[in-house]
Length: 460
Image (cartoon, rainbow, N blue to C red; front, side, top):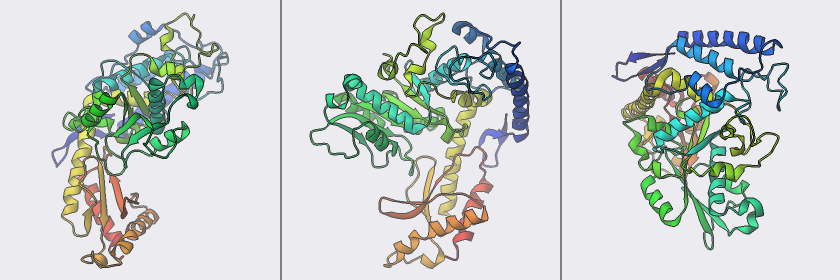
C-alpha cells in the first residue's frame, strides 16, 4: 500500500497511502471474518488443508523481492495463508493450547501447528542473514531485543562451557562480559538472570562474550566492528551485535556496520527503524552446528517426536527458550512483500536525509545546541531559552538548564502538540534525545518541531 513520491527536497521514497492501506485492512478483515472465524469454526470444514513442507513452499509465494507487490497480490497471499494454516478455533482442533482463538495467531513451535509461518520465518531469517553477509546460519524471532540478547549470552556461555547445561554454574569459572558504557541495559539484565552477576570485576574472570552496538540507544553511535572482531577472534570470544540492522538495507549507509559479517550473532528489531508492528525482533546466528537447539532443547516427546510423517527439522520450538512463540515474522514479511527491498532501502535513506536536515536547520536557529554530532537517526540536543543564553559560565547555569527539557516536555504533553523524551546522561544535564525514522516526515514537520520547542520554552 505504497506509492512513489517526489519531494521538494529531491528525496524519493515510499509514501504510505492511507486510503490504500485502509482498503487492504478492510479486505483482509473480510477474509478473516469469512475464512477464519466463520468457516474455521464450522465442523464441516477441514481443521487444516495439509501440505508437506516442500509442497507448501512451492504453493506459497514467500519470496521477498526488490519491488513491492500490488493490493490484489497481497490480498491473495492473505487468502493463501488462511487456506493452509491450522484453524485453532475449529471444534475439532484438539492439539495443545486449544484456547488460542485469535485469527491465525497460532503458537509457532511445530510445522504441523503453524505450517505457513514456520516456512515464512525461515524465508525472512534467511533474507536477513544474507543482508548481514552470512550465506548460512540459524535464528529465531524473539519477544523483543532484550530476549534476543539473553539468547546470545546463553549460547555464548554454552559454546564455551557446554557442561553448564547439565551441571550448572558451579562447573564453570567466574565469567565476564564486555560491553560499552552506552551498550543496551539488557546485557546487564541477562548477566543478572544467568547468574554471571552485575559487577564487572575482571581480575581472575574468564571473558566469553563481547557486546558490540551499532546505533546506541541514546546517541546512535556505532562501535568499530572490525577492531572488536579482531579481538574476539584472537581470544575465542563470542561477538554479539545489537541494534542498527535496518541500516543494512541501505547501500549508501551500510558502511556504518562494516565488519558485521564477522559477528557470531545479531539482534535486529524491525519494529524500531522499519516500524513494523510491535513486537518484531529477530535473533540471527552465523552458527551452522545447530547450537541454538543443542543449548535450549528439552526433547519433550509430546511435541517433538522424531518419527513424524514430515521433515521434523521444521519443528523449531525446541530452539526457543519459551517453546511456542508468536508468529512475529508475519509482520516483517507482509511489509517487505508490500514495499520490496527497494522500498525498505528508501525508508532508511529517507530517515538519514531528514536527520541531517533537522541538524542543518537546528544549527541555523539560536538557542539549539547539539550534545553530539549524530551518526545515526538520533539527534540529541538542548534548548537554551533566552534567559540562559550567554550565561554558560555562571554557577547556576547547569542547574537551571536541567529544568528546561522537563518543563517543555510537560507543556507539549499537556497541549498534545508533540511527544519527545528527555534524560540526563554521563554528567550531562537533561537533554532531548530525538529519533527521526517516520516514513511520513517532511520538511514542514521539521520546522514545526523547532518552532514549537521555541514557543513552548521561550519564556523559561
